[in-house]
Length: 318
Image (cartoon, rainbow, N blue to C red; front, side, top):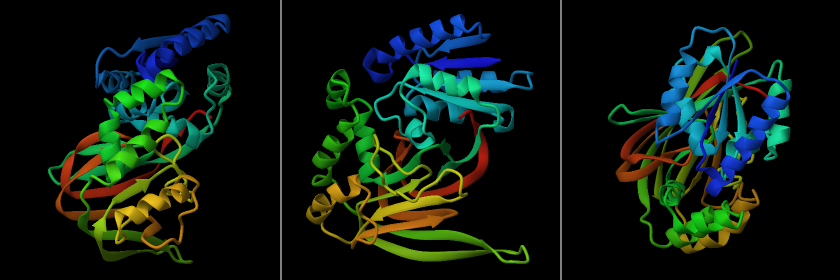
């Protein structure tokens, strides 16, 4: 059975038009389905939990919404092994759909879902705060500048205005520019965990301890881009069992400003102050609370945070 979780608020009202089209196509193709419309923040997660606990062998769960709704649904699923997951994107950023190669056109996105036989098993990330709060993320989780921008973007008038013009993803860039020079930097102690498997199958872990002084941001990427298509780590893949870190520290904020064009074009690897590294997990402790996000959703202001990857747990219909 196909189960749709629909968020009408995505894309400044365009989501309703998208769902009306999908609803028409499902009727036209005589596809059996059930649809649930979200009524409040957090409702998508409640619906996902209820659906994922149904006594069925083939649960196909599709989100009609943006990255925030996808994050809610991922955190509501109680058993990933019983779910085949699909997305019909309606948001302003759509970084999950972009990373999976899912088109914005609802006709094409639905065709991909209906034609999927095997799909792709991808990783998701998990972030754990010092007080034990756990949150899954499909795209990325981070602290510092990108997290502050995500927090502001949740109720940004700039985003709402740009959404009406069909260029909502530009709100991330606008807010980044206005936030960069007003934010504080931080000193953060980081432990980076990497694992290797020898030829005889023995796994060994390596822990690197580093201190990032004057940290501007640190993002742990599952997909290559966040913030409406900004390629934070062009090497990131949701199928490699790794989190791809992108961090900026130790350089003046004015210099970071002039590096932003390189960042938006994915040309920042190897530049002074930028760290790009694939890890299995990381733990960091900041000198004072930093804003934390998961898939652009505000988690809290934290000093101790752990991040890890859950390998191949999500089956996506593509």
